[in-house]
Image (cartoon, rainbow, N blue to C red):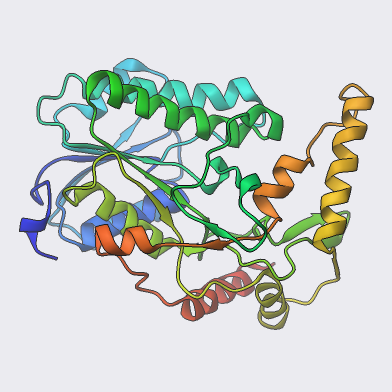
Length: 350
């Protein structure tokens, strides 16, 4: 990669929030592998840093600072962002409550954005969002979902705090861009997977009472292998001429839910699963939503029509924009990525 094709020099300070997370730690490793030598890794206090430190250790010549703190603290944010050129914001709230999601995804983002206004050499804020923000109700089953598709306008109705937090987080980033001219890029990963992740994506199905309800069927799953995703995020932070752009992170040659599940059973473990056709899953979600309203919330509306459209309706996915504007391509082919993931799953089983 030519340094002349970057908006930053390789020794300029960059901040990675959520640096100890599944994607964040891989991003730190990716930045170091590509020759960036001045990184700040923001982590929660008392985090187990063994994996992150192991990824950093081979790059003894780089200046990697690990900062413990809380993004709800303006002072912690000020210290972490002092003099940085690029912020990769991966820290996010996975709270079950809407107030918790707002605090840990939106307020924390605002605190970081406030700090960028005081940095005269600041060049880009990379906000790592999620496919969860999309509202595919106007995309026909099997149709294309790309960066031009509608974002959820009523995230509360999905009754999913994570979706609500991510939608409001993106709105905050765009507000700072419109009001203060803050340079930004938004990355929306699909279903990120790889070694270190033990659970199967909910887009495949739901494990309930010892029975796996296979909801995905013939749907293509918007997988992105964690190393491929990290490289796309890195490029979003350093490439010129992509300010205010949104990039989906999905790999090539995506498997169907059925293909994934059959291979998982062959290579990891066998278990009982019950296939639920799309028409049945949609009807069940609709009935659940109606009963929840009738019972005035005695049954939480965990399953509803908005969630069905987002996770189990079925679509195809494009990574064309990332390829054309970032020069990105998934370095690890999907077949090899799945092999690595299944081997990890097999070894991680008790």
